[in-house]
Image (cartoon, rainbow, N blue to C red):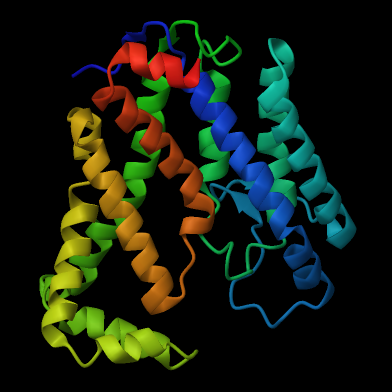
Length: 280
């Protein structure tokens, strides 16, 4: 099914952009003090700061104060983008992409940020390129920006599945690799839920197979949009599981992307008039 069609009577990209930006404002505001502590009392970093974008474009060192100021500017730009219209909306989105790199380059080593925030500039760029992003929610919109957002999310899961197959061959869908991974994580911090799970090899095998199937087939939401609710629920289960058993908090920044998946799920499963009544 081609993604290049119009959504009549409801502007999905504008709704998605406002919800995503508002969610980022809440998360960034809640994270400001933690970023301040990280910059003020830096630990011994295993992961250095982000120095280049796509290994080519250098990111200048803003210093601790500059990083915190960029953090505040990013919040203001995102909040303005939610309520502004016309060219001001697009200007704020473009400026927010630049502010993201200044705000996160020195705090990439923070555990809750490491490899977890890279979707933010990609999503903001897609919103910036959306033709009806500045139009009201009740206007017609194009579906392809939503499809592009789903594509950006898919590449994370599909690439993760590919890496599992590449490095572990078929052992990941058995219990061995997953159990070894849990044991390795348990060496560095207290993971009581993981320690409990290690006593049940069959459950480990079931969970590892579940992860592999979901990640390897996540691309189906691009060609079969009506299965999006299934992957929405499965993805949330996966991320909640990583929090419980591994204390890995991918959900903090990826929850905004899942909010867009929820909107897309409603679009395909709820009658158009009822959906318009909810959002418009």
